[in-house]
Length: 245
Length: 391
Ligand SMILES: Nc1ncnc2c1ncn2[C@@H]1O[C@H](COP(=O)(O)OP(=O)(O)OP(=O)(O)O)[C@@H](O)[C@H]1O
Ligand SMILES: [Mg+2]
Image 1 (cartoon, rainbow over the protein chains, first blue to last red):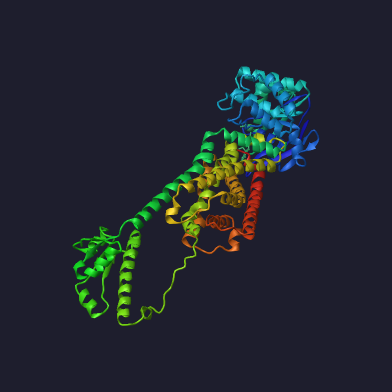
Image 2: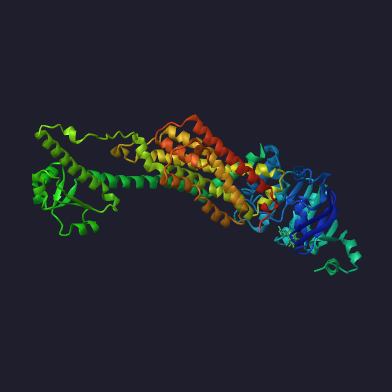
């Protein structure tokens, strides 16, 4: 479970995140929805302790990120916005490296790699160097690397970015599988349809603030719109109307 | 397995797969300098030995004015060349290194027992002619001395009367020390090799990793940034040390191809030399790795890091040039200064002198302290938020 309370972060004059609070529960998929520059990546970066919030708290399974950053990172699997692979290592070696950084022993590491590569359908690329991987192959490897230590909580920053329809659908199935295992999945996206198709709960942020936090259906009712996309546009424009330029 | 060790092994493995890094760190870096070195030294020896062994041939103006002197010079091995029309012009245009002119009044002065005069016409700004001039001067002086002594004896006086004092030369330079003059650039070569050996890794593991967007996922693992840095520094240091070890070995081999016996000098580039150079360089290699990583961490891109590091590479040149231009006696405090300590220490080793325990300790402690400081500063930079974020 990931709890976020009153997070603040600014870069110089830019207030990237202002008073963001939400909760992502176990056994649920939570979507962080917002337009470009809304503060999604910045929020997630504070969750996996890459950045320190100016104010506010992050709790992962009850652990305070400020007090125990290593413990929090141990409890998290992260697919960050930057998802570069090591080009001179094979897909498998890339995954194994992260497993060893998580202190897995060699037997567990081998079993876990095999299981992940089977689940993500990576048999064709396991022994290939990451140099020249397609976007989809890169994302698969990065996801396997994020999950290698079998984390209870998962943070994915725009996981379907650059994926085609088939790959997006496969990713969706994979995330449903993780939810069925009782994990807490938090992902960000700026694509409505994706959020509708996946989420149990949607947190909409715009200009660094949470403007809505509800189930997809409730959200639409709340905005009084016919479709979710209309609801999204309405919520976003409402929030920008009251934010000074 | 400790996380730092995992990082270390991965960086080493990854960089061993990179052809450019391999060629630079383990081939051209350590081998180019020794090869250049052999070629340069042999060329220099060739020029100097050539001059010394060639018979001295000197154009003589007015040879007929002093047949005895000319005959004596011939006996001493001088080849008398015909006189040029304009001796001064011949010297200025470097057609002749030195011209001997015997004036018409020579015979008259000589017979009266007065001091006769001959002229050596040369251009002292041409350094390569100095050996020739000195040889001619020695011959003329020698002839004058012998003749003077004969005249004193003929009057029943001891030749010692005319030379109340002589300064005898007792050159204490060991043959090694004479060789070391040529070898004063060697410490710089070693520092340069270590620098180049680690440079690619320092950039690749920091600025490169950030540019390829893999630093952020790495920092999201439950490994303290300090441990990640230690692993990366370790890999950089390992490559630099491998490069250095190859270079020292190459120099030891190259030393055999320099025919120093002809100049009667000996160079100590054997096992003792190699071990002590490695020892003195060890903390310096760590210091360089930390500084390179620090600079690479500040740089915004791979290219920028390369530019900064190329500039940083010139810094180790300073003590080498300084000691060549202003040769100073090695003092204990110098050993404690990073770079300078290695420079004076290695120069002393080349000379075949043993290094005392105190200078070695000062060198190791001084540089190790600097390395520790550099590592601590780099750790601070590594802990900063902006380090991981590309773009
Ligand atoms: N390292 C940084 N330095 C300066 N400004 C930053 C930095 N990171 C983010 N910002 C600013 O903070 C705001 C939020 O950025 P963020 O990347 O969190 O948005 P996002 O919701 O992830 O957008 P996108 O959908 O485009 O990925 C933007 O205005 C951005 O310019
Ligand atoms: Mg983003």
